[in-house]
Length: 416
Image (cartoon, rainbow, N blue to C red; front, side, top):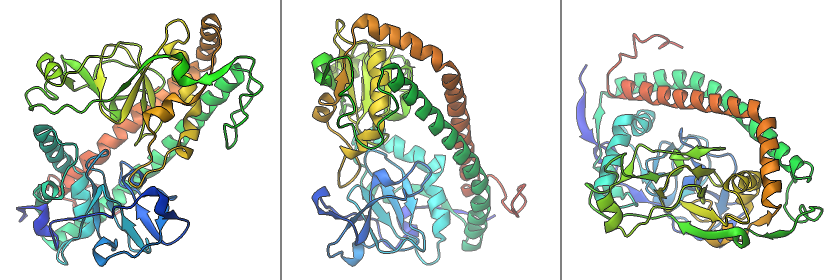
């Protein structure tokens, strides 16, 4: 097997093209589909719903079949291969477009970008530089193996067939998880005496509550913005024994986030002038997995995509706030509009509506909620474990195929 080592830019027609800078007030109901980082899933799928722009688009900003789009901020390393029948489309500023040469199979390049080898290079470069925006130049210089065109096509065909099977299982798991989440929210609203969840809008939903309604900030002791350390790599991400550094992917839904695989050393904390937020802080994602929530079990710090909410001890328990925000999650996208990815800001979070039973009532509701959700919680945990194993299996298979660790012509199931 003859494989050569090269760089991404040598397999493409240029060294990368940044996307279109356009504000949300220019979105329209028709025109060119604007592909944003938030429209791309972790597995490289494009959301069915999106936004459009009706402006003059230069040729360099038009997405063509076979183009590879890579996220350079937030969901760093996430990728999307433009399919043949997408139609008129462009891409937003936090995406970089790479166009494969005519002697390169676009599907192979897209799979290579999802491999552990490719992603590890992104993480290593991002950590060493501590720069949150990953430039086109950095992407262009990433190394990857390149077999012959015929071999690239065989590998792509093999992975296409194998990943359809994995995607089918993943769809079933996602559907089950969504039904369980909806069941939890329905139980929550019912225990609060509000009936089923509102169908489309929060307006007027709380009018019949027997408890007072207030903005969330009225029951908070403080809000803590996420931090972006800018220190050298020996202090940044240095050790799991330091102060836990939490990203959205580390957040454990419906529960507490304890340790992470990454941390900041005491030297790094001092250099960044960071103070670990207290345990019992409720964390909420403000973009990417918008509305994802967890509670910290230990003092920690986190990145800029997350806001920390510290309840007033005499007014609100962390657990009540956690489940309250879980109930509101489906309505957050209506508040979130951006030219790159759906997001909300800290003040919007602070203004979210909150009903305030007494602390004793909160504890009674939480105890009842826990009892009624025991089975659902166990199933959610097991589904989460299966999804994680499936994602690991998917990346391991891709990595083995695009790096030549397996011979796809003899691999089991290669012929579908």
